[in-house]
Length: 81
Image: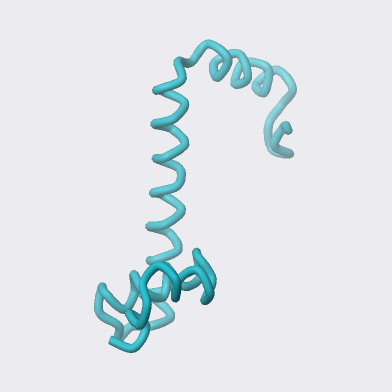
């Protein structure tokens, strides 16, 4: 899907670059994007919860990311610490 702020020519170039990229390079870009998203989300949580420590910020992020049910299955009562 072409981004709205990208010209057709630029999109064609981008698609061609991704087609030529190796699987490990594509995987690295994917995980970099995931890490960037996590960092941005956690920055927002820090802004909204200025008194929270890093463990609390991570817990808030994980709950939002996984949902309550999966978080509870994965981490048990970590919410209450």
